[in-house]
Amino acid sequence: MTAINTSTEYPRRMFLKMSAGAVAAAGFPSIVPASVMGEKAPSNRINIGAIGVGRISRIHDLPGIWKYDQARIVAVCDLDSKRIEEGRELVNGYYARKTGKEYDGVTGYHDYRELLANKDIDAVVISTPDHQHAILAVDAVRAGKDVYLQKPASLTIAEGRAMSNAVTASGRILQIGSQQRSWKQFHRACELVRNGRIGVIKHVEIGLPGDPSGPEAPPMPIPPNLDYDAWLGSTPEVYYTEMRVHPQQGFDRPGWLRCEQFGAGMITGWGAHHVDTAHWA
Image (cartoon, rainbow, N blue to C red):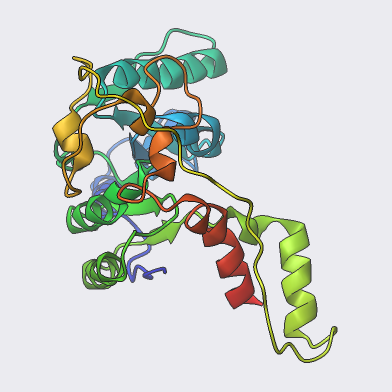
């Protein structure tokens, strides 16, 4: 589900290029530091905000971004204030090690709408629980941001359709996290199928591991660092228990993955990849 952006440049960068041309035409000195020219120039850098900085963000999404010099993570956002600070520490620490000097260039946000209002941010990566995906993506493209969205795209068909319509109307780019398409073995399998190398395919079955629901857990006090009402979003109100949300210590696999109102287990977990590969082939 990808909307193609008809513009190849961000408006801010187009303005900077036009301004640079006007200055040169006016005869001003053209000797500038090498750091402001070329692919790594600040005007060419994509400033990115990370919404949701839990397990999948830390082990997959953030490292997948910061390895590229043309991208810079400038903001993190989470409904858990502990995770905001842990996210800032993680990203600032990476850039400090990379540059060999102190770095404190990451802003923390509690409300994602404030992050989206920051005009200096070009794109966002959304790594929240599944039930927040569609609304965040819709708000992001309407705010003029390009989006990398962790799978699944949504939990309902209606949400997915609304998101697709919003992306198309906005003209922004939205990419769904379907990393399996980049893995050689899946590409090779689809290549064989699409070229008829294994004959005519009449039936496809997709296998997924089991993902049983967790045990019943009693109500617990809501941690003062967590905005639980906002975390529930549009889903039915249920009492807080840590097992249903995410660990307060560490970044182990969160319990919401096995709760139907927040996620759909392996159907939207591995299933989002395997079903996509079957359609691809």
